[in-house]
Length: 187
Image (tube, rainbow, N blue to C red; front, side):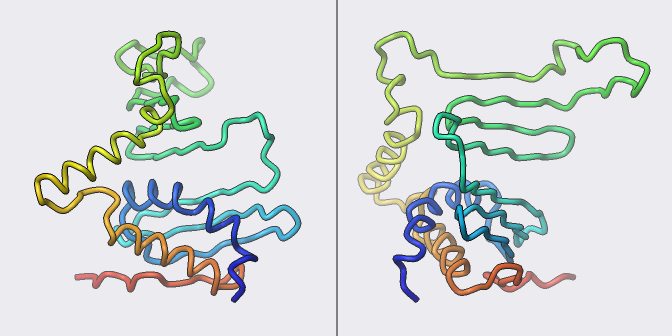
């Protein structure tokens, strides 16, 4: 097909794709729904591990709202990253009695933890090339070259998995499940 029709997807799929592949591993299959007027989409993902996830790419995002929001939900805990720099870790906590608790507050050792860069000092780490990970990516690659060891992140295998996702979007109609990696054998 004509790649000009999916240029926006090609421009944007690698960033969320790299996060998804790094955290969740290979995608076994996916299906998506797409709105042609705005380009917004929602994608249902099934991973080779058996986990499931979603990728939401809104078409009419407010231009002043944060560009990205990632959330990973585990067993009784979750992590949310807003705009690539604000991290909230929702630790496992005892749920207050439903309809009987007078306060939404939990004990300090169960309360969410929140991190955000300190932006007021003229430090290197306050530059977006640092907190968005570009410097650490280049350092990781350079160290791999100098030590003659394969990179552990941003590998060709990971790039291939993201390319398979992109190709799947290009060759699969909305609402149809596409298989990217054959399901693992069940014992």
